[in-house]
Image 1 (cartoon, helix red, strand yellow):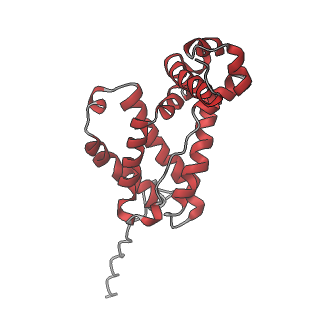
Image 2 (cartoon, one colour; image 1 turned 135 degrees about the vertical axis):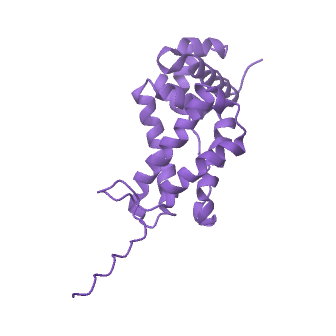
Image 3 (cartoon, helix red, strand yellow; image 1 turned 60 degrees about the horizontal axis):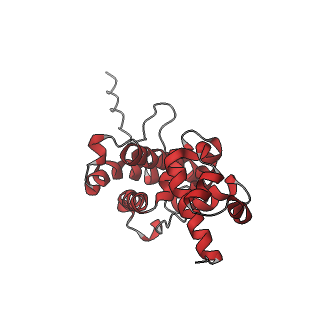
Length: 205
């Protein structure tokens, strides 16, 4: 039975995702992906030109980030962590990016561009200083990606079995601080707190 163009592309992308996930970006080949999809390698090249184009198509996705400005400010950290846990668990493209990005600079750059384009503008909307968006997004990503790497890729025993609600409970306060907390004091490294009044001088005798 002959496949339509849409069916052929879907088969290629499905095989590519599985192959990139299993072998990584560098070891996966157009020939092996074509074999998995039961298609001639020339057809893969016809639709996607090269491995870079195929990879970009295989991991193309929308983070589907919620509008944080519409969420109670004190709960944006929990909302972000909950959202990303759900996305990691239902979209293998994200895990493919994470696995491959650890060792391949081109893949790492792809991940950076996705996070910058989609995460920074959303975070900037809840920051008192929108110019902090890139810094806050990078800090939030460091925690979110680190959790994903340990929970879904490296499968650290305590984390892989931890209920989602518990992960949110641990991680949400950290993300909350990154998104809405004050900038650290450059002199002490600590966030500025309320100023303690100086003791009154004793009267001269």
